[in-house]
Length: 169
Image 1 (cartoon, rainbow, N blue to C red):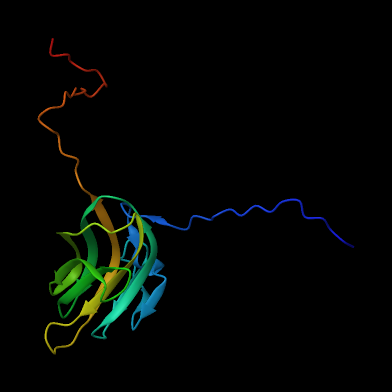
Image 2 (cartoon, rainbow, N blue to C red):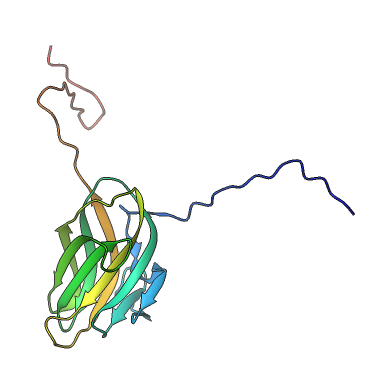
């Protein structure tokens, strides 16, 4: 048989992840010299780990506007650095974090640049201090949204815990 095609509809499937929620490290799309390992102490029961200087991971379609800081859950027996990029290693640097020597999971947070577009691919590069060894483990990351400032020329109402406002007049 022959078929007549009257219409065709394409629907975009949104596979993006919210930048302001905890993004488990093991959900990375691309791993270069990084492996996924079980870890009961990690928030999702898994972690990323590397012992290779210059290793990197990519997270696809991280969505959110107005990013101002980034938080990472890490652990390291050597210390080192993590560079956060938009669009690829060596492209726009969003943040640079110094990873301390720490046997327990540690939360690092630092200010970062916002991405050029709302949905971007985010890359993490793992670097040793100098020519030394490297062993860095990553549990998760999330961005924090910039706090909107209150301008001097606006009128604002504050609510109490029950949602009631108190008029100034």
